[in-house]
Length: 175
Ligand SMILES: [Mg+2]
Image 1 (cartoon, rainbow, N blue to C red):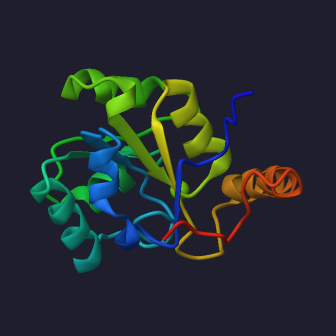
Image 2 (cartoon, protein in one colour):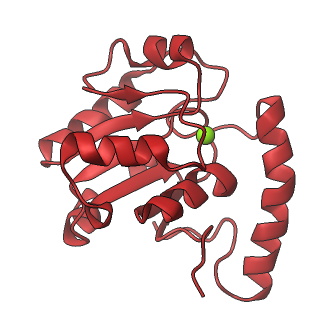
């Protein structure tokens, strides 16, 4: 059975991602969620930590793009000081539409693409549906937007299910 919500790699925060591990897995494109993955959902701007991380990823030879469910206004403001070529907003994850668009744009296969996000129901499921490698991070802050709060409610059931089956456990990071 395919575990649609199970990450391939589970980290405490984006800075802990071992890029060599991704390269060894054949990853060439990293797609990042924004809200509660790179910054808190209510933080409109990026910061030095995000900049440094994205630079590090690019310097190691990977392409990076943002794939967010946020509005164009939110996504563009966040990305304005960042050196990312492409920002896919209104992605409606878990629909894999923008993930697939990004893969076409960078001419990479699903197996060469990783999606980094903080939610099982949008990011992990979306990446599964697109056939990508999945990186889950703990959310930057515990607070969420209203629609995310509904997702978190269902997410807790999934975490509990996976935990009971000893598949993976919330808070048991790979880093
Ligand atoms: Mg998020």
